[in-house]
Image 1 (cartoon, rainbow, N blue to C red):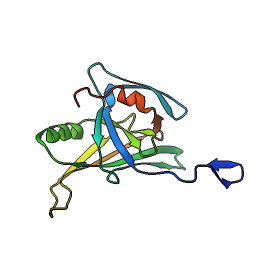
Image 2 (image 1 turned 135 degrees about the horizontal axis):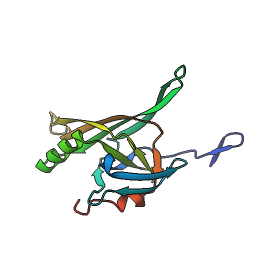
Image 3 (image 1 turned 60 degrees about the horizontal axis):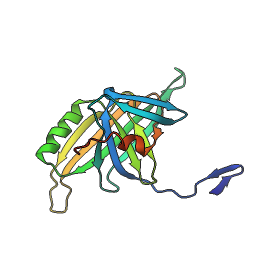
Image 4 (image 1 turned 60 degrees about the vertical axis):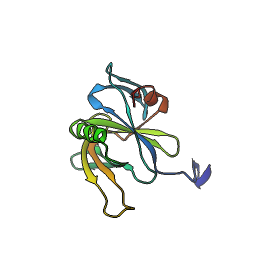
Length: 169
């Protein structure tokens, strides 16, 4: 801890970035939360969380406060970018399904914590297939996620997510 202001301690250094991304169908989830933390996550029987492995420094999620003071409104615009390598026949099927569904995403951050984006309303997913041009170019898919939520992304224990992982993936 380091003192940045009198009476306030804060971590001096922290690592950024995303280690892994998890997704589930928003409509299948029941979430219990309080004080910025999700304490329980359950999915409809037979539904699972799906894990996406991402290369370091290729994906990013943000939550930006939006609203209007005269109208006394507030919300958070959630945006995410996922870069996924490769493009198998299975990838095509799964990505098309992701693009027409409303999904909630949890990100495992490089600092060891997890946050849930698009928790209530789900994300709208737009995908771009990019073959690259040169041999050293990326060959895969770039997904852009967007949506609006009432609150900031909540923290969640990794154990709540991994307990619901798809057993075949």
